[in-house]
Length: 287
Image 1: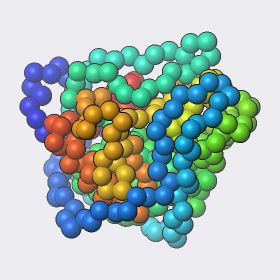
Image 2: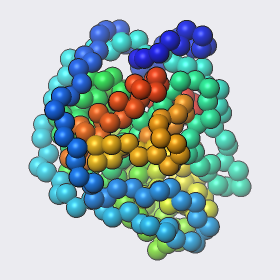
Image 3: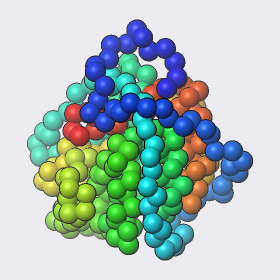
């Protein structure tokens, strides 16, 4: 994308790389959105039965009537696939590892998009124009009205991951191990049914997790809990560390009404930092 990475070692193109030319036009005239309800809280590690300090407020925007997914004829450039210089930690003591940022020397960044509340043809078009692969952490209850909508993102190289059935942001406070496990397993089964692949990564609703949740994640067959330190929200970038994107950052976004403004903010930060968007699952070897 940007920057000269010729000095960096890289492998042959990934299995999702296709030949072609990407339309790289930036959406003009985007206006800044007001802060969205439902913004994820700062990620917080909890003890097994502790609670998060600032719970996320669920998005109040009603899900619109599902529109037909556009058929795109976009072609893809050859996407560079960097040789991983990080190995996903194993499950130890029945607890899934927690990944907040990837320690890497490669000029790469990872895009993740959550929930699935708002489904617009524009979001499909923009992801194709920018040629961004993303990890889609979807919630069953927010996508059940039109699960097929997300097949267009799959065709572009994105993967569907687990964000629970209910998106209960207080699950670590309100639920014990078994109820958390049931909610996670329910999304695992739904993802396999709808998309033909068992998710390998889990994102906690609101970002809060506990040892009980980590145990449930591992028991459900997932490889890691994935949080974040940077997010695109309300048309701007927010950082927990520093004031710009860094190599290895995992960026949080949502399927919301302001999707275009958030993606434009991410793109501006990504280009300014000279980073390439790489699929997290490919880099971790869990695709």
